[in-house]
Image 1: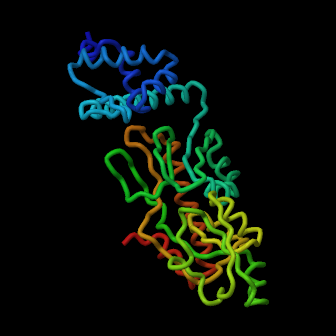
Image 2 (image 1 turned 180 degrees about the vertical axis):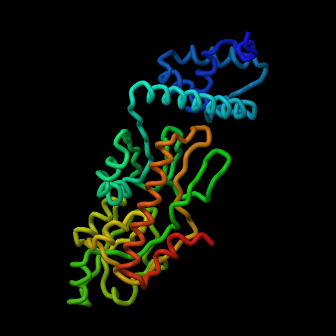
Image 3 (image 1 turned 90 degrees about the vertical axis):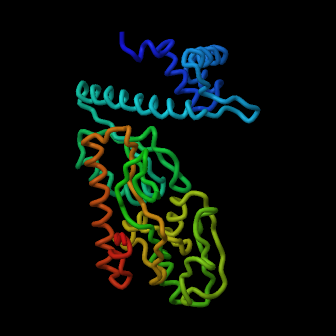
Length: 316
């Protein structure tokens, strides 16, 4: 008999434990497993009794993994992801259909990826793409996706990371809005802001003396809408180069001032170490990197005074 089988009361116990640990709730785990909450509680008690240790601490504040529980959960979660990857590979071999799931911001998808989505599909004709879109700050786990775009320092114990670009920003607006400002320099300027997560114009990114005078603001929680307002000539927005490079290269957006800001953050393409990077996912990742570098290079040729190649990709 397999030693693992002797160490567990049942194979089902691992599925129950993983669901409870991930949801930190017996009730949510029961709903996910389509069983009753008492059945989940009984299975957990049986597993802990069989192992002779507590895996979950129960308190008025809720559930929390013990040290032993955290050790087991990490290994079980890794094992489940490995099994899932193997089953997906078998399904790909059977159907010939490969699905790649990407976790991206809604703004990046709308304003950078969507204009070249036909190129993406032509480059990867045998891949079906699914998108997990994030409307606010680019954050969150990548447990259920093949590849995610995140602002992280680099690889860690759980994730592999590939450098995409530094976090670089500059004020942008439509050509018509900038021309109107030149014709009437004392007119009111509208600043289109991303609420809660964007640097403030005052004390942060300042578009400079050319934009002095009275000010108004529009504030949105979704950066895709912020840029849409700028494209429609509604005001000046803070442009993340990882999102606005396409519109700067086409001329639909222009720099509102020659003021480029680089933060300490780095944009990376990450994936779980426990989720093997399939050949198709690696190819999509490399395509994103190459396209981004080509896009920034085009903008750099149009506005060499901004020094975007160095600012965006210099790693020291």
